[in-house]
Picture 1: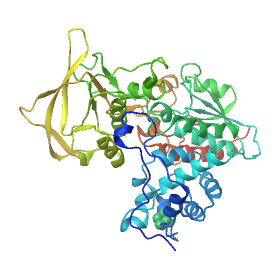
Picture 2 (picture 1 turned 45 degrees about the horizontal axis):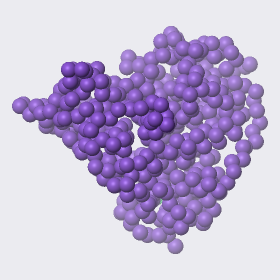
Picture 3 (picture 1 turned 90 degrees about the vertical axis):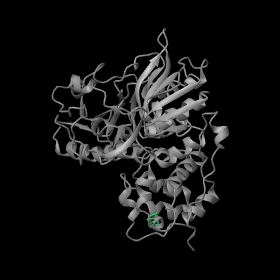
Picture 4 (picture 1 turned 120 degrees about the vertical axis):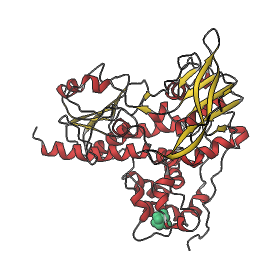
Length: 465
Ligand code: SF4
């Protein structure tokens, strides 16, 4: 009998008043009983509408049916046929705008909690089973993957399953890309990311860290070294700034630097870890996306008293996930909506002491379809802050572009690649994820990595050695 409850089975969470003082994971995951109860909400629809919202084609009703029967190991195996990083997707995918958006149960009540169930099967398997590497027939052909974020890891995993010798080149000292430097521990535990990466290593994927491709080696040198194809998944790590006075004061961070210091360099464990991050009593985070929410919630955990999200439009236009905004509010983040910074004010010795802002009102829609914010005359006011984090977006790092003259890029820096195959203007070189689209989601990057792996396989099969 299906469970016809209109609501998802609630997932336990740390109390907001406790969790805003620690970096432990906020959501605690389903128990076996909770997972089976939620899985029984799935109606096993014949036409599988939920699957059209999954960029990596997970057999959603199939795996949920297995969870309902208590066959957790089989459910994990079914998910990982098409998704190499289920514990990560189950936590950070915006399911509400992907699979869950198409779920028929959402027509009346809440959708099936597909993401929570995916997370459950991945966590269950990690806890209860040893990973057994799959036997694959080796092709003896080498492929290089640049970047070990979600696009690169997915591409590498799929190519390894097809028998290629895959080497992933990572610029940082730890693999994982944005999963390690961008997303905070309380949303995505780093030990778990490394476990997923270890699964790939067991499949034969080699990972070379501290390899800044475009500096240490160029794409042409990799091709000369015998890599027959290359996938570039280097993400979007170049921060944007507003270009307002005072952005070079001490105490102004790009969200990228702020989060990298905290997530990758573990600033919250200073002095045990030796890269600190200075947050004052009051912090302003400029922006309304998930990165802004991550930075604000991290600042709170580092001891700031007041943390403001300063966003120039209204909540309806905020690009952050509803769940992230909700969690931020629960943790005491103050939202200053329809507010736009004019300049950052400094002390005589060059430290931030405040931020002058306009109040805004919404006018006619602009080219993005969202209503254009317009400053209200005479509404200038100062917010007292000692730290400002700029979280208004990132673009691709220009290093590979600048050392690969025959790789065509957009004016804003994105690599030009075929949407279906990831093929670029350079033969044998494919690209996907944020380096092509600009900052987007983990799952879209994974989808691009997957399509490129398939295209690379077809390219190498067609190409004579
Ligand atoms: S649409 Fe919802 S109810 Fe239907 S198969 Fe998918 S998850 Fe189950």
